[in-house]
Amino acid sequence: MISGMAVWGGAGWLLDRWLDARAFFPVGIILGMAVAIYLVVARYGAVDPPPAGKRPTRTTQGGRPSRPRTQKGQR
Image (spheres, helix red, strand yellow):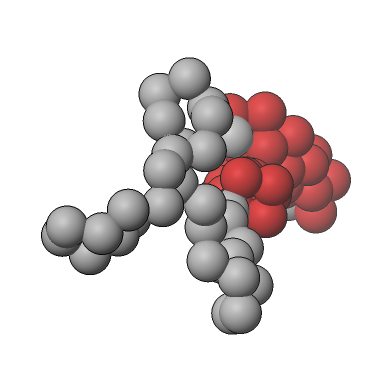
């Protein structure tokens, strides 16, 4: 995120120097933060939910499937 702020803030600073203005530097920093946050959310965002008709299988600590659960007294 810091690199996004540095790159777009630097571009804004260069535009400020070239056009003799003072608005592009803060806009560049904010734009850099926004793009960096968007990229992080797009890359590491929410996990897709499991398909609707499929139940997740239960596993033991070792990763083996657990025994099916039954009513009390049944095998």
